[in-house]
Amino acid sequence: MPPPLTPLFRHSHLLGIEGLTRDEIVLLLDLSESYVAQNRQADKKLSLLRGRTLINLFFENSTRTRISFEVAQKRLSADTINFTASNSSVKKGETLLDTVNNILSMKVDMIVMRHASPGAAHYLSERIDAHIVNAGDGTHEHPTQALLDAYSMQEKIGDLKGKKIAIIGDIMHSRVALSNIFCLKKLGAEITLCGPSTLIPKYIENLGVNISHNVDETLQWCDVANVLRIQLERQNTKYFPSLREYALYFGVNRQRLDKLDKEIIIMHPGPINRGVELTSDVADSNHSIILEQVENGVAVRMAVMYLLVNKQQD
Image 1 (cartoon, rainbow, N blue to C red):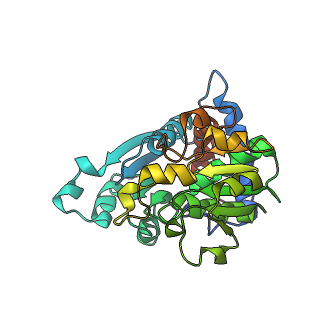
Image 2 (image 1 turned 45 degrees about the vertical axis):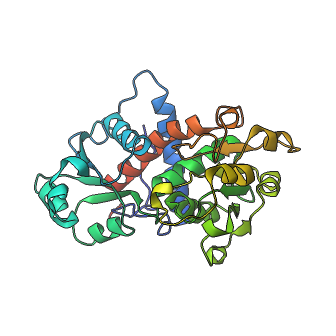
């Protein structure tokens, strides 16, 4: 069973990592640990959200995140409904707010939403009463991914204070990168962003991160490398000559890892463009904890939804 609630968590929604304190992040990670253990039991189910109705409202494609949330909801005994925009009245011109209000009229308790527009979850949180979990809003934030990444790192290398974390790849278009920066900085880690200059946003160093354009130096520096996908679907112009050239200069392959004088941890939020940002002999190696990230994601999302529904009252 989860530990008793503390007055540390008072949020009705999880919209991003930026709005959380370090203590709230630690509370979520600590609670996640109990769910990781529970999920490894033969009987994985808890009755903590029995009688609650949760809807997964996805306006963008998703495999891991949507299934992870659904598994987490079922493990907590919630009633779960899946919504995809491609099969809805959104195609007929219905607005986001109208869609959600129609759903809420059916007495839904929580909405897990992914949307292409940055700020979509914040917009809804100001207009409806149900709990909202941001499952990714455009290029803004992906808070549960950052939490599961932090948990996975801690599981492997312990306390993140002073640890060196590299985030490599398409920083410009990544909601994962921004949420990771907010989360890891609050946990005391040192962060280096690495990628082509065209994929590093201007002024992002103001968030207290280092910038590098040399992947070999970055890999030698770091304890953990979180490698991000090249998001071609969000790129409306060419940021580098070709995928082949990107892989040559910024792809993480076995040859690069073999040159290091230490072992590092490799992570990736998925889906992987194999042969571009990661080669298969790295993604499937002992360095990689990619599948552990997926496993831990279920536990982290269980913790998030449990705490939101049972938040402490003022």
